[in-house]
Image (tube, rainbow, N blue to C red; front, top):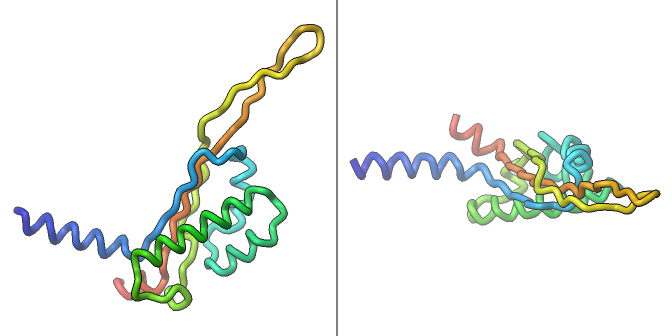
Length: 137
């Protein structure tokens, strides 16, 4: 029974070798603004995605650029012998989920107060490698 478990674990580990991910938690940007930038790079090659993020004027693009570079570094840590250029990395999946919301009060005229919701988000970037995926099929 222990042998089967080990074989299964080794197979899962080998499948996950071509996939690397990075997470950004509690980013103080609204999810809607972050999704606008995330939609630009979904499914693109890494070099193209980094170029898009570098020349985009939105503030969320700087945070996403850092996150994509972190995911590439995570992929390199998993595959020490492989080369990033020859692996043809692309952004397989990118999700932007709402995070915690800070609720604040802002003073309003005539003794009233308006509630301000300071939104945050969680971003997950998953990278895929086209060469490893083709080699296993």
